[in-house]
Image 1: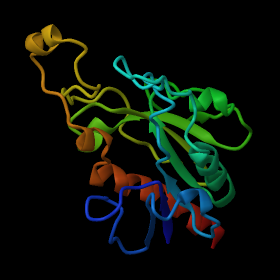
Image 2 (image 1 turned 30 degrees about the vertical axis):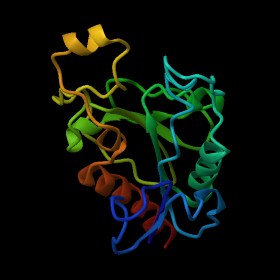
Image 3 (image 1 turned 90 degrees about the horizontal axis):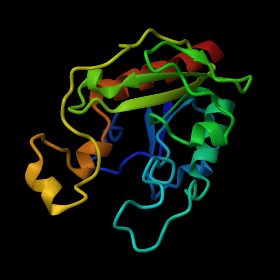
Image 4 (image 1 turned 120 degrees about the vertical axis):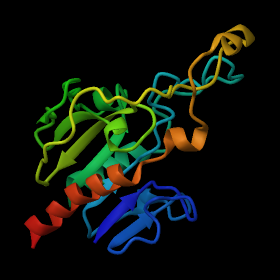
Length: 203
């Protein structure tokens, strides 16, 4: 069994209705997860990325890192129960919590916290239509060789347009909100397979 933390609810969530997966969506509040299964954690990233303040048109500026303690709880769950946590490339949560940034070209490297390992992988290798560079943090698991380097995905991932002129000049497709945040099934299965090695080691 693997606990999938901070995932989308049914019917859209890719972690729903899977055998041997215990999904924790917003209603269940993954901050309350108390084991005993290894985890795959997708803590909210909005307050940790480059638009942590809310974006160019926001009326009230947000607070960097203000996610209600979700990342801290996810990190604690991975460290305690084993598994893997994912966040967007360049997430400021890494430096805030004392985790070293991984190598951009791929490969696992020591996280610098004396506990885990970290890497950078593009979800475009796993079925996402955008490259979607992603940082992983893993503890107590076997570290597989992933599909490293730049993927061939070409759809833009970033939010919206800053002006009407930019919208008129755009020549590339951009993803909608749901698809942008979504996890491809192949990537989900890869993360679950990593977490399951923690269960095998504990057995």
